[in-house]
Length: 419
Image 1 (cartoon, one colour):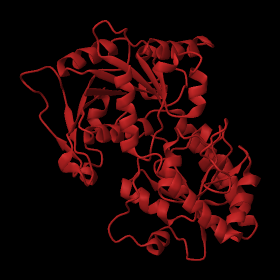
Image 2 (cartoon, one colour; image 1 turned 135 degrees about the horizontal axis):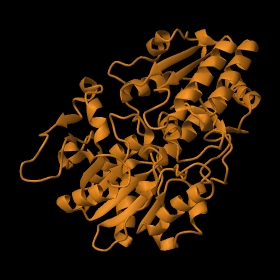
Image 3 (cartoon, one colour; image 1 turned 180 degrees about the vertical axis):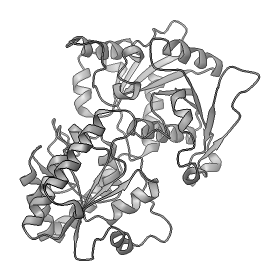
Image 4 (spheres, helix red, strand yellow; image 1 turned 135 degrees about the vertical axis):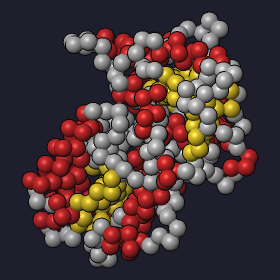
């Protein structure tokens, strides 16, 4: 199948949607599909981002093919896998001028040039600058099959006081698309009444950070790099800071642990606010202010946005990962999957809906959202009970086996064939 993955965000831009698209594209290519990523030109200026770190994966090709109008700039991403020799390339076309009202005309033009059979739109409002144009997916009428993967159901900006109309635009997108994919049970339940069952599928995401630290990795050395001793407790947090992820509660829980005599540190793994959502930057500033106000600056360590292998090293160095999502733990969170893939004992918040895969005390410890005391208490349980911590680590390893990229790619292709 010739598949086009349409995304408003793609590496080198920082963000989970772009990382997901990269991983899905590689997995689909490894299954033998011809995969093209169609994204915006605005990221071209940043294409040298950490190129030295990724030169084994990213190779520039010609800026213009004189025989076609397909690309202004293109990268070819070689799948990183033990089966690379069996894989096809994923071609990345950075060709869309912007995600305003003319975007679909450009997307469809490139789809025709490439002979695509399917377009899979990776939808998250912030990835498209909160503009609603991407929601107006064209009706079939000779166009490729149009599937939308909803990374969340957050609404775009329309105009001041648009109110309920903003949700209607998201609802319209799901109804107009030939098929809708949601990544978590909460969103599936919300769209189930809007989309016929045959056109709706629940396909999870996976971890975009493989369990693969740098060669020669030593856990004690990695901890010492951050000033953490063998007898200290190192908490880990992964992902951008925003209102929904409970960064303030996390810092408050750290301060409570220190007050109770626990030699605790916190490693903030990855970048602070990403490329798509400008509100993340403001929230990160609030968290930094709280860190200073609680006088725990020397116990909070930041890796900054870094290579996947360095993220892996940081996660492996932690004793407990703490992810206090304010809207409850959800399998739409790539940060959750990364911690599970690294077999970390995990403290997080109760899900908004029943998730059969989540088993309190077996593969994670659950507390109420917005509850720093509860977070600190759960961490204290793990400090006092090494057997519980080991059980959670084993549970995380078992759970992550259900979210492989090969499985996700197979489900995506099978859904498209059924439509």
